[in-house]
Length: 348
Ligand code: MRU
Image (spheres, rainbow, N blue to C red):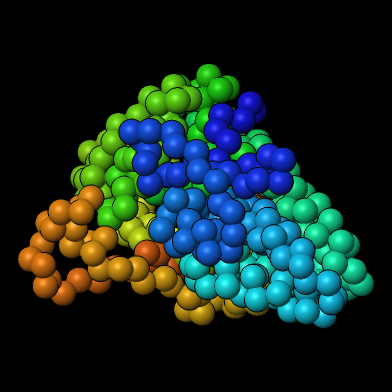
């Protein structure tokens, strides 16, 4: 599939991203120059979505370390490299892709003998992670598209498209592929409170690709499932445990429960870089809690009393028993998940 959006890119050793906070009003490209700017861009959602966070961290670690050319001692240089990785790793806790990158980059530090070697290897690895993610998006689309029938009505949540990855997405790439194949699909995009990734980003991508859709508030999904013939729900994932429990944008679990009740197949789509090989089940996935002002304010204006007590977990965990299948670049993993996931993530 042709790549629709360039979300993150390194050009002449300078790192650029689309600042997603300004979408859909404007496609503003910004440069990230050092670890503080990279940390902040991930934390404030200028760049978001598990694979895109990983790719930005990879290019970002390289660009940041490159600016410390005054450090000549190899041990000191390695220490700076570890410091940068740990700092960027504190930006957001849930998306496993970030920690996948950090692990890979730390391994390079451990086995390198010279400062130039580290920089060359980090740069090569960053490009490789990006290139592989683009390829994985296409493979996910290829394996996922057969689960979408002619005239399918699909519900999705948050944004798991090109803006969230290095290619055309995970859940959305499956939908784009089915659309490209002429299946006349129709998408219900949940707006995704509180940060509106569904309305700001998914609707924008669906417009760009010409996929017919209707934007709905999150609390409309139940009645739409009851009234319409919804054929499937497909979402992305931020971290998948070995037993198939997975974290994704808050509200995903409610959709999974609704899908079960209404007998609608429920899929998640993700590259293997989103699977955490060290976590047995979803209870162990760290869930980010964000500033409550994301709930009490909208674009700077209070929509609740200023002192309102609020709760803002960014993700929830969907238990494996609600999942029909996990669409990956190696095919669809169906239940029972344990052994098959263990086999798939060997070496992650
Ligand atoms: O808080 P966000 O916008 O980073 O959350 C993103 C999601 O929950 C996506 O569904 C997930 O990262 C998968 S992206 C292919």
